[in-house]
Image (cartoon, rainbow over all chains, first blue to last red):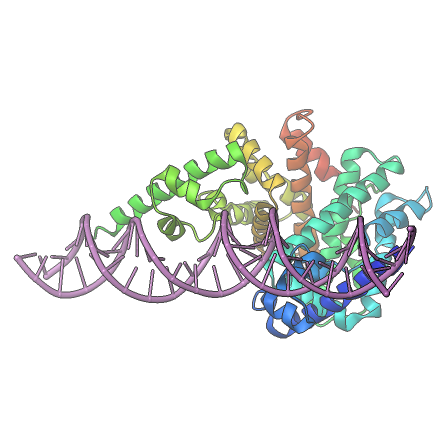
Length: 191
Length: 191
DNA sequence: CCTCAGTATGGCACTCAGTGCCACTTCTGT
DNA sequence: ACAGAAGTGGCACTGAGTGCCATACTGAGG
């Protein structure tokens, strides 16, 4: 049973490569950094790099926790009587907390994603996964399918607005307040 | 002053190439079609293809009217007293009408975009442009900046939901009704 | 200790998108 | 008819990503 050991070694390697790559991306930009350069900086061959990450983009996203499941679980954990939109707003804390914990890195990452088309694309794909999970979570709260889809999509759109706002326009307050303001703009199913 | 002639010839060429390419994409899929194949089918060299379209993706989007400006103009044209959300909903007609006119092609295009990552990315980028234009149009109606951004983002998110719904789940009614239902889920700034 | 199998690694050659450069042809205006 | 602009094709190159193969490394069993 050395499989756990191998897996751990592999994960450590992945992490190290990703960190090396991220530093290069932040320094020179994503597109201006070639896989050969990453491989050399990380001390392995180009070919081996692609054994750890199926693509250059994955070196950015690959080691981030994908919070999709946690997000959906947070929605499921809200009181059943709570209106869906409020449940969504409250659940966004799950996304924001890790960002506040490492605000420096989070902003560098957001900036990188924002200014790199292929990373934006990946980010959107991830959010599309989140949307599906959120939609399911809302349907489990007996929200009709179309409503669930609209609410989930809108919540993620609001989250993106907040992230942009936070990234630029030097944070006019803390994110939680900003998030509340943004969610308050859309207040559906009011009596 | 034969420039108009050159420009017309060039546009005709662009259109023909794009149509040829689109047919191939629908038949074999976007990624399974190489630029060489498109070039051969359209009767020009690979090198010349890239003189008409900066990338393979542009052969799909390049000849579509970009309705961003029309959309923003539609918002600006709504009565000043109308609530922003209603103005957005009404303005979406600008996007839907051309889709209904060529429903067959529109669905093929939506399907192609939906199942091709790099086309999804382009589509998102276009919508991001729309978002900015819509935000400006709302601000011109004296909607505060953050509110305008949230409303514009949410409206586009709703539009996407409707497109998905229309594409799959064989249209449970006409799109206009669907759009009204979807917009009604989010009814902000109610007294 | 040796061997066998599974896994990681590196190198090579290939496809495909996209670009720069150059030579050649085809207008277009004078 | 001629000079110059514009369109075209070919060639070679970069850079991402993949398949294949030969070579290590490592852990388990004889």
